[in-house]
Length: 118
Image (tube, rainbow, N blue to C red; front, top):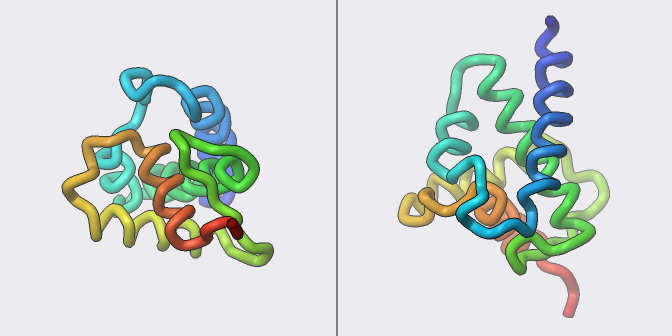
């Protein structure tokens, strides 16, 4: 499997899982901020691909609907790498929040950087 195949596969899995958990109760979340941070800081292809896929999937959802009350308006041209970097910075800057769901943290990070016009 090529690195691109791993990343695309991870994105599809993340999209399905994030879609299912986007508005579920917090107890139903399958990944915490701690787990996402570990994945995003991973040296391995799978971890990096899972991070990129997860962050891209959340961005795709939060750009069209709310996730735990968070909503972002992500401009055209923002890359998957930029989305990952925003998420990693948020996780690194807020260690006190890492026990929360990864989906809620990602949605919040994107809303802070790309707020929708009021």
